[in-house]
Image 1 (cartoon, rainbow, N blue to C red):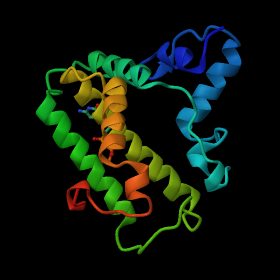
Image 2 (cartoon, protein in one colour):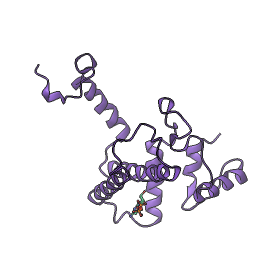
Image 3 (cartoon, helix red, strand yellow):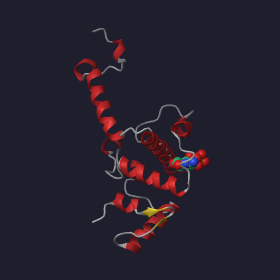
Image 4 (cartoon, rainbow, N blue to C red):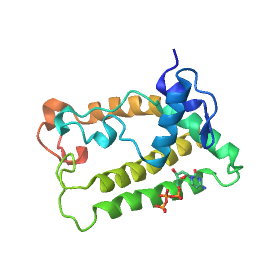
Length: 176
Ligand SMILES: Nc1ccn([C@H]2C[C@H](O)[C@@H](COP(=O)(O)OP(=O)(O)OP(=O)(O)O)O2)c(=O)n1
């Protein structure tokens, strides 16, 4: 049985070429989702209380890498997507995320005071950052999921819970 991300990976350009099963329903859903007419379960986490929030398990970072590689290839955009350009594009998108938060003061977890349209805008800008980050890592031959595991192990060594519990100090500020 095809997983959701496998179905997404069968999307070619702007239309789903051949969903593996339940074709009409999947096609209708894809078309409605593209128009923004459907509210996907758990979209933007709004249907969940903040303390219950989790991500969907798919797509994986490798799924995202493959989808973006296909998107870029279909448009002959690899000629523009060198590491430096991808970095600048990613930083630009980070700026767009920052713009959504600027002048609002502190914002509570789950963004309870934001409208649905503001949440969707944030979801889109965060996705732009992730898409460029994944492609930047690909073009630099960094295996991002494995690199994250290594970095988190290092973080645990640098910041032992027993030592830093409840403190936000940088590791260089500790004496021993
Ligand atoms: N040369 C490009 C242009 C776009 N994209 C993809 C990756 C991003 O997910 C998204 C970025 O598109 P835009 O540059 O149009 O930026 P926004 O979607 O943020 O639009 P806007 O700047 O109007 O908010 O499209 C890409 O891969 N390569």
